[in-house]
Image 1: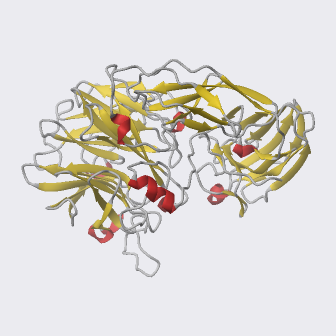
Image 2: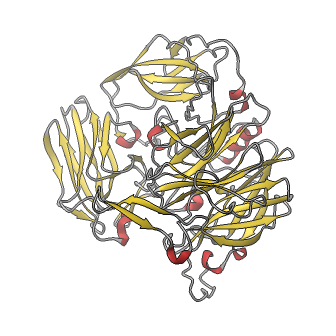
Image 3: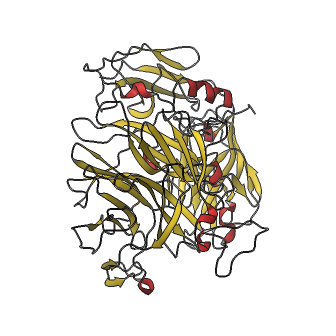
Amino acid sequence: MKTSVAILVFLSFCACASRQDFQEKQQLGYIRSGETWLDTDEAPIESHAGGFLYRDGIYYWYGENHAKGFYNKTGISCYSSTDLINWKNEGIVMPRDSFPLLYRSYTNDEVIPEGCSNNGVAERPKVIYNEKTKKYVMWVHLDADGYVFSTAGVAVSDSPVGPFTFLKEFRPVKYRYSGIDDENGDKERTLLIDEKGKGNTYRDMNLFVDDDGKAYVFYASENNATLYIVRLNDQYTDIERPLKENENWARALPFGYREAPAPFKHKGKYYMITSGLTGWTPNPAQYHVADHILGPWKTVGDPCIGPESESTFHSQSTFVLPVEGKPEGSFIFMADRWNGHKLENSRFVWLPFIIGDDSEIRLEYFTEWNWDVFDQVADMPSPPHVKLNLDKVLTWQSVKGANAYRIYKNGEYVAVTSNTQYVLPEELAGKAYNFTVMAMKLNGQSSLPSKPVTVSWEEVGDVFLSDVKPDRWAQHWGFLRYDRALENGPLNVAGQVFEKGFGTHAPGEIVYRTCGKYSRLKGYCGVDNYASFDDVSSIGFKIIGDGKILFETDVMRVNTPAAAFDVDVAGISELKLITTDGGDGTHLDHADWCDVYLVK
């Protein structure tokens, strides 16, 4: 069998460039999402779920430090930069030991204080500057014991690089609200989320300072059902009191179940990008618009377009930053590509966008980009002239005025690039496709498509299925993962780890048209080890060729060894990899298809 190259997934989501390559691109001013970013000391940047502050020509990046893994083992990091490319490590500006005992995590050689459980967190730190008090004010979400405390933490500093002094923890709002009983569907009930007088829950959060100097905190409340927007006091260290609904605070998107709010403002309108609730697994973003910061907020839709847009390009929002020195309406969408198994291996996704005259937000995934992408010209780009070379690479001359180029396969938008070439991803033999290229601007303008270039895939060779995009797929929950488990960890079946394959969720199916060009299908399948803490997972696996069952397992559980298969697929035109829920529901039915490859 031939040696496989890991799939680019049309956008190089799993690209791991060498350190030298990264540094060369960094010197040229390029931002490359999904890679390990290095600071000026050539150490990996540790600043997750971050917030950004621009002050006196310097950007400050505050975030969770997960160099030691899960929970609050280290504290809050700060990095500084004048160009958003080269980041200096300013150190831990709020160490773990600056937080109350409950919200810390302890090493094996430390004694856990009485009443603490060693799983405290300090999440999504955001810092704003108060012009009146000359103080830097940090707000953070504090929690422990599976997010049952859900409280706000406030700290201040005289310097943007700390040290920050912890002031207090509290839940800002106490409010009675009507909700839907999850167990009874449409049964209305009145809830009082006022645990011993503490107030309503406080989780994913952000801060925003308006043009008039008034500051607001945005956070997920009501057990993540509703976002709250609350005006802060003049010092930014507490909320404005007394609270008056729709005057100095509001419930936004009630029972919308949104988190990770990233608010910003453009031409008098307020915008906010949010995430759904799927743990460490990505989901579709939404953006919302309001004429007043307290609302009402209108949900417009998913700002992401193009391939992998349904997963927000495998990331979750944390901040939207206006770009200094570029035309009005230039922004950077900042997000985290979480690795739920090893938070220290999480990556950053930064995407440029411009809000044009139509006031719409369009986020597209660029594997790399620089500041030229924000420079606008008046002319509409003309269609590119596309050629195909012998190495299955589409090439074209740069188009005046274009920021980037979209690639379409049989009319489906499959990639975007700021380069003038596109390496076609491997396909199964026996197929032919028409490719077109369209020049585009970041503000939404685009050219007519190029003339189509027809590409045939007739040479037959052994191929891993995870190196080729399926013709279609569907699953109960989440998104199909290539060469990773569903929760972004390694493919691990009963302790056996595989480098290639799919992570999915039963029930589901993955479908390929093989056009009768291959002789055998080989590989393994089983329940992913992610569910090892819960023995209710159960999955059945089945391979169907042209409507006939070629392979089928008994119900497999989390500790069942991986099942091997080697089936005859000669003459088969369509293959389906099927997973079922084992007959007892879908709870934690994380399924792995491992080392699955077709033999010529």
